Image (tube, rainbow, N blue to C red; front, side, top):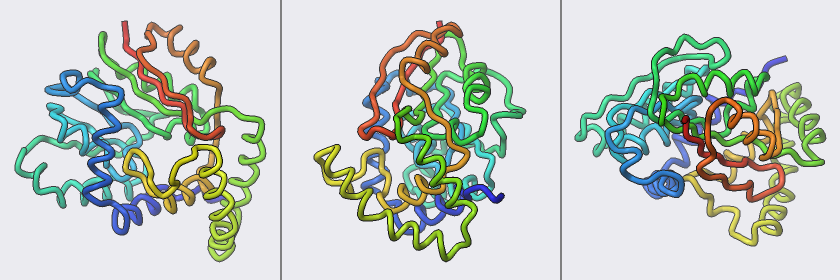
Length: 257
């Protein structure tokens, strides 16, 4: 079975949907959780960097250095391309380190002031092992920011949909995207009472839908379970934001004691 190519989707997002407005939205979303002084002059790692939008956002917000990692080389290529397109970042001359790395078999070492991983660890196939690997990278007094899929009664059904999507030939994948587009759009309108095309964090509805249908392996957990698990490893919860839709991502900011 061929798993979903996240890198291909992130490269398409970068080519066709990544705009200055979306980059600004990404930076604003970080400041919902972090104070400016908690980012400035800090050492950051972005685990599963995707398009690199948040690696670049941390740089523009004053991080001393950012390490962007991903298992998929296409994601690293997209991150590098987006970095090269940014005139402000090139002027700032802040180092961006790109590393191909599997968080489940990581070669990373050292501590970071901020370990950031949004919507990644639940796609590794071993979510709690991936969480453990992330916690080990956080310096004492440093921050761990993760976002993970919320557990819902429909979650097992979505796992079947995702599994079937990844087994399907490319033409049927396009049919599935077409069939799910309107129902998911309407469901988001109904649940959030907001414009589904106006995405937070600089994301894009179409590429998010492709990511959602294809994102397999697929794991999930309740907020309570995640908080209890990470607090037991010597962290304190600073802030959490529940998913805006039932199967969306719960966001957590922890600090290592």
